[in-house]
Amino acid sequence: MPEGLTVIVPTFNEEDNIRGCLESVAWADDIFVVDSYSTDRTLEIAREFTDHVVQHEYVNPAAQKNWAIPQAKGDWLLAVDADERVTPELRARIQGVLERGTEFDGFRIRRMTVFFGKLIRHCGWHRDYPLRLWRNGKGRYADVSVHEHVLVDGRVGTIREHFLHDTYRSLDHYLEKFGRYTTWSAQDLHRRGKRATWGSLTLRPLWRFFRMFVLRHGFLDGKHGLILCRLAAYSVFMKYAKLWDLRRREAQSQAEVRLAAAEADKAREAVERMAER
Figure: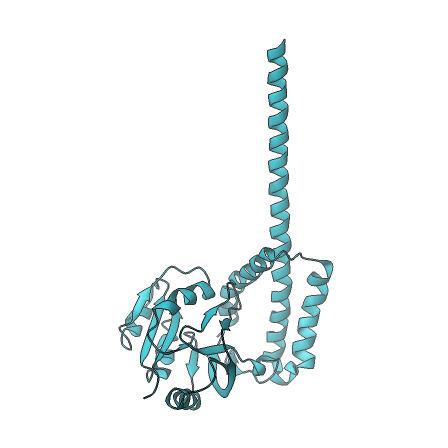
């Protein structure tokens, strides 16, 4: 008997994406939609496909999915974002794993990404293999704010059949998420004790562009590749610029506390001298 599969789909105001996503996973035993209090038609559309819909306050992608994992019913869990689609080839591959069994406890799955309406075949994005399928009870997301990833306790295999990620549809759509993601990245670096050095503010962004555009042949993706690589480099700069700003504000706050404490000490000493007279 095939093992059961729960598909976890986090959402927030995804009425433009959610139908296509859920249609691509309608074959699963259980679709678990975790919504962050959408204000559009996301919930209405989701309930056409599943009754397993809950709302939960959003903190970051990893925290949202980790909250959902213990409530999943299936023997296996598949995490799919609302702007992603499981292809028929990937469906067949996953169903084969469920039917025949496997020695692995998790699988990395190839992801192909559409950027501004074009499938990106270079820039390093064609080598994207996030871990998205794992045995229930064997995996959870690392406690990070951005670039979330699953940690699996056991052996991990690879699935070459891909799913599609229809990412940013326009520059405005990109910029909507840009500020939030770079802030989360800066906060992660801050928690790890990292600092914004001259090198991280200058050389790291240049290296990101050179690696994606030249070494990973982003130029073969045309203007889409150029814009993608420039934006990726700028996101690196902004991540470290925001880290610098976090450190600056932290140091300023600490200096203000020390100054206030010194002034309080002076005032106390003045009161003590007056009392001695």
